[in-house]
Image (cartoon, rainbow, N blue to C red):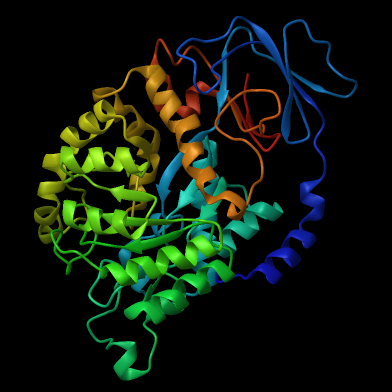
Length: 438
């Protein structure tokens, strides 16, 4: 589960047979949603060679040996991107995570099964913002498992008593007991206090292949203990995380809801806020002016496994949610969308339905742009730490070939995106067809 760069290189080498060159693919007679335009293109042909889009033009002849997929006027669009996932934690319940006999191998196997289902829902890329996903990513990249591209953060970084302090009641602080918590051993999160420990935690995650760093800057609702209103980490500690990430030419994103925690994070140089459903319009305007991203979700008031305490903690977040989506759009904040499912695997099948919740604030073309082009722009913020060189989120010549052939026109009927089993005829990731149907 905790796989470093040397082991990753070895695994990728062993997976070479699975990564053999694919034949060229010609999508004939398709209408293209290119990731940004509010309208589909005129009927055209799209040629994929290797892992990229080679040519977009009507009337193309299929190269020798190429596969030809008859579009029949259907829509070809970029693969979907979820900007806020926890690939390991979304695949298991809290009970299974706490089971004494759980091994890293078992956790990764559960995550691998869910990763394949996620890919078949059309999600070809995800940003994992906390958890032990390095081994899963390596297995997917090698061809051992099917799944989306993963931009991993590795363990979350949290202060003692922070939102990423996952210790059991029986576990004391490492500083006093000398013992790492079980969650730290599994790679779920680092508990780091003070500038020196924060620097070490961030550098350790970068050493193992993190593409960005996730820091807990405020309270949350997926935990029982830290109140939503609290601010976490001093300005100096947050600056330490940002400095360490920037030295590696990448960025820090933080978990934060309130104006106080968001303002402190912005002052420290953080480039992205996760959540923010309690932020004021003044704070959203500050984010816009500083070019800070808001990675936002459409959260539920409660779920079957949510305790009454957690549901009570979530009330102010739910109450602010609709206002923040509308205000962030109106004010021109850089927006990304993600699901943030945790420890309730039964929710995973609602990933596409969650996307449709955006109809409250966005037109169909805006939704499609948000979950393709815009989310891809956030992924690109990792710069040279991005694990997959190339352009995603668009259908254009030279871009990576992560594509979906949709039965119909999602611009006129966005509800098509809610039923991928029925409406996604072809799913392609990195030039390889992972699903095809008539």
